[in-house]
Amino acid sequence: MKKIDAVLTKIEEAVLSFSILIMAIILIGGVISRTVFNSSWTFTEEVGIFLNCVVTFFGIGYCAREARHISMSVVYDLTSSKIKKLFAYIITILTALIMVYVAYLGFRYTMSVYNLGRVTAALRIPSWITVVCLPIGFALGAIEYFRTFLLNVLDRKNVHISSKFKLGENMENYDDEKGGIE
Image 1 (cartoon, one colour):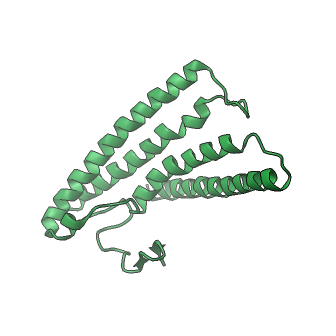
Image 2 (spheres, rainbow, N blue to C red; image 1 turned 180 degrees about the horizontal axis):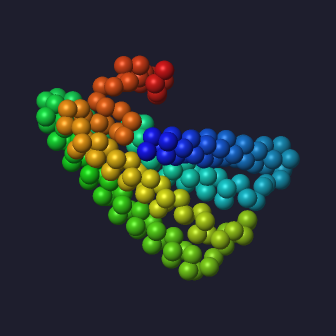
């Protein structure tokens, strides 16, 4: 299981990093081309939107694994460990179920776009390719939240905030100013 998780993490990191890099190069190149050479690249908007969707939706599972999603924890932080454990059960299973439902809706939407047979204006690629990252991203997020829920069920002693972190674990080096772990 750990090898699958490591491989999945590396794939997600590669896809996210590559997407951000390509998005930056293409969008900045398009601006330079338009302002300096007075010639616009026709594909920059389509590629930028697609890569933004990839980063947004593929990032769901990655952020869930790394415990980097936004959380409103005022009430949570003031409670006892038993209540935190209860919250962990409720939050992770509800989030997983909602993500499964949204992944299902995303799949239905992708299939409806596929059935239309449309292509993008500039690149002429099938439009469904640009939205397939929605159901995949939400499914990856659902898997991560189900894993966290199962970890909380199996480990009664600790509160797991993700499939990678327990409450308070590895968070002592977290710096809000820098937005990550040092």
